[in-house]
Length: 300
Image (cartoon, rainbow, N blue to C red; front, side, top):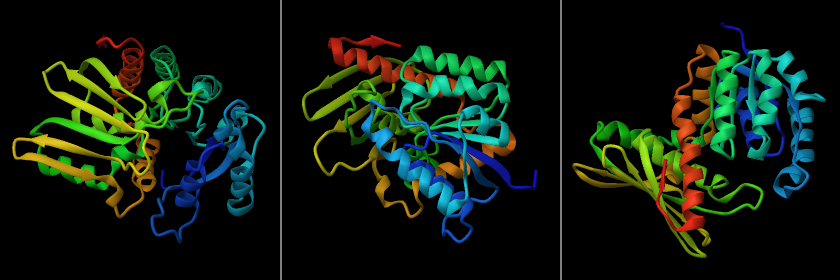
């Protein structure tokens, strides 16, 4: 287990792939994450999604020429040649299909957020992971913000609620809140944990507010903005009063903090986030989309 893990990437249509590869493959990087090296990748890309297909060529070239990554014809070829996998496709619609292709190889997999674009597909991914006994983890890097982690440690569990906020851009190919709502929802769930029973949404052209009520009566909200200049953050409500956290002030890149946790999972086989919580987050977003469309409270 002391040898560096051989890591493969599925989907080269997001800047996450170059960020992760640099952090792993470049020991001179100030935030280098040791223990693995990206050696193989499958490009992917969705033709009807400009932010996907339009970026594949550049990222493929950078990985091949700058980091010596082998570009392969299929996800299966990548899975066969590595010890662990980063499923990075920006288009959540293809995650289930790509996971189906690599699951039989029995390698641990990190699936970049969102896990899927419906609870049905999310549960199928979970069933495949169980069938092939594969550790699976999915998360937004914001979950591991230094400011958030520090605030949670200082709060010592005495948190009555949280108001998470951030950009809420919409992308037609990624229904409703799955595109940017996943980030703020991950902040929400990092604080609140699983157990949301219902969601309601208020929305207009510029803003969306998702209100979740937990089984124990706590209330958490997500406030999303489509106006320019909105940063990510959260206000924690504790017995000692509210505490504002601006995650943009972290000294360490979010991706580096996330990658440390991913490498732990690759090494130990134990994801730092229960997959059941990730499944609930997908259902939370699904319920919020339904509430936004109908104006009604949605039970989860």
